[in-house]
Image 1 (tube, rainbow, N blue to C red):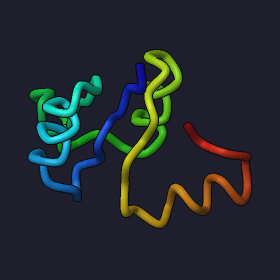
Image 2: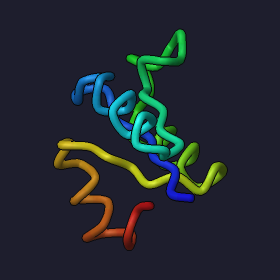
Image 3: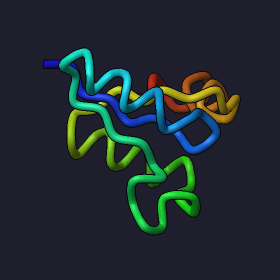
Length: 71
């Protein structure tokens, strides 16, 4: 089963939509401090929980270009 983590700047309803389609999806705002998560922490969660990051944050592209593909 695909698992996702949806970044802060995207609406929580995206995670709810994916969950409704049978995917395991969380949104950073579902955590009490989720709005404070930095990119590296989101990558860490994705790696630990085998999640795919959904974001519109261009910093993840920078991470990909310099350090290899993020989840």
